[in-house]
Length: 367
Image (cartoon, rainbow, N blue to C red; front, top):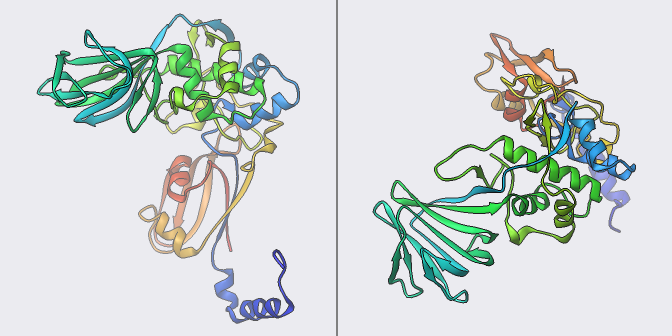
């Protein structure tokens, strides 16, 4: 019967356990931790919990971002890099490109041509020269073949002889393409609305000024999937918060967010290696974050696995990890990796990434 062991199977398991030497059983490390992510700003699971307890999106934002005020954005559109290093870019659903009228049911392409871009017909013949950047638009969206469907314009920019695919999109349409990729669409509306305001603010505060683009479509900025990833619930959250952003001291706040706090968020100067203090990114208690499956977690490694993952940070046999400094929460800012012959001081982020941990809120126990 599924979920139960027979008496014979239980006996075999017990015998196998007895056959393992006690020393081998004891060798290893146990790492107990909390949270998932850097810990700075809004905990998404915490926002979910607050919304379940009847808090509005404004109350959620003001809890996680100390002293901010809700304002309206002035920016109308953004340019998002969605692919690079392309020789050509095939697209459909466009009605106009490079000054030419197109049949939206046919597949056209932009092609890198020396330092310029050319527009090509479905049969590959040249339809128009576009200069260093070509732009295609349709009745509301354009489909980038093999990638997705995007509102606004699809642009092809020649950079060093290859194409960057860039989506120039309205600010609200951008947010619609972000929220379902950052929060589950099934979550309460106020959690999604808080996410919408945070996403809008983060985008405007972190524009990179790249080669014809402002943002990336991945975690270097925020995960953006375009029109093809939108849902009715997340679009509603965008509409109900239209143009809303958070500001601190008159500037758009860099509204960091992450999955799970473990019960307390962290100051920005401690949550990131080399981070700077920001008045609105302060550690706060997070009472409803415990709905997350990552609120508490445990990882186990053998001695050999730990030594391999931390190779180069100690000499001899790995003896202990001594926590030297913590942030406002118990997250590790600095620790010493102690070997039998030599040791070194590392950041909490170094331990997190070397050991594949969900956060820097961790305790280490050697058996």
